[in-house]
Image (cartoon, rainbow, N blue to C red; front, side):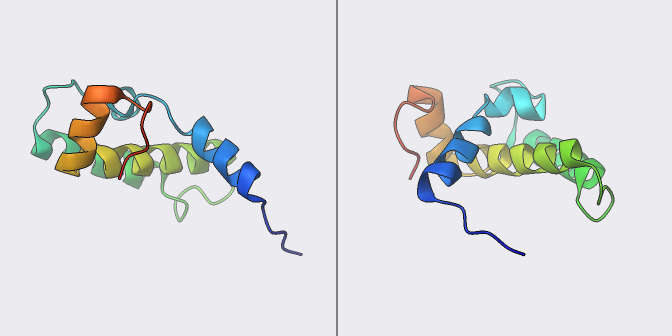
Length: 91
């Protein structure tokens, strides 16, 4: 049985994922794109659902890692985050 999540539930889930992306990936703010990518790959492989099918903690970590990488790998989103954090929606 599948359930549809309401918009507010989805937003709540997204807010839970909103830790500092640098902290999630364990990189410094002055890390290079290559360092960020390398760390992302290691963490995503470690926590990938195909490897950790029955581990909800790993699934949540995989989502956090992916969310964080999506911000830090995009120059415009990274600049926006570095300027205002999550105060403004990232485009």
